[in-house]
Image (cartoon, rainbow, N blue to C red; front, side):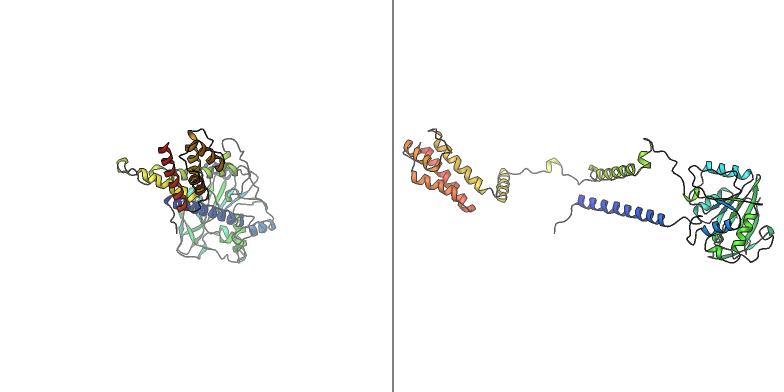
Length: 388
């Protein structure tokens, strides 16, 4: 079995690597297309918020979730629901959010994942693990229980808020007093943070008391009428980017394919570079080959290629050419005519021997017969030429 060379192993490893990366990217893309972000207002999955959307509409709220080409908040919105964001909030977006809050809006932030922790950190809190998978939380102030809720909300959490500020009100906390739902006034508006997203999901909204608790949380904003589900930070955005010559490579499938091909070519060139090559011996360590090795090599190649007939024809043609050169006889004449005319001009040539030799050069089949015929032709030519 033939062993693969080092370059073949490198090429195979590179192919396997890029195949794995491509398969992983396709899997993640397919999974992303099949699974909506958590607490998305259009998601009917257990962790989605479609039930919340329908519940709020049934309670008389005007609910919006437009697909935006550029992030903006209409002054007509009373409440913005930033539920479990999946992208970072940029500095310009923070200016828009805070400016809208200071003009009288209410921002409700709910979540306990990575990007939610960034939002919480921006407002001077940190998400802190409670140490249990389902830690119960309890009301601390009457703001969210007045009027009294018809059933006790079954709120649980796995994270609590660790404050770095003291100008907030704690509405719900764990049994040891760690805040879970807090709010504070900012400008003419209000910001509400909740580290317990379970009550807002399609599954959690079915638990007793959770729907009424969410409604009480919204009523803490005063008398809101128009609600806005922020799907921008779930990655749902319009195609506002114009493809130009400067961003064609990054924004189009063809451009990204060219970048991918260039990366593969670059890696291939690097792997074939001198720094990764085999060590070469010094010139003085190289041994020269003997001339006989080249002759033997050419002979072996000729044998493998089946040049036996061509060699015999060459010997036969050269013999007739050398014999007829002195008398200007054409070597391409038929053998009988060539021998007859040569015998007339040169009595030293035995016609019978020459005819037998030409026939032998034409009919030899095996390599042994070929060698014998070539030796006989060489001997005949030397004898005749010496006699001449």
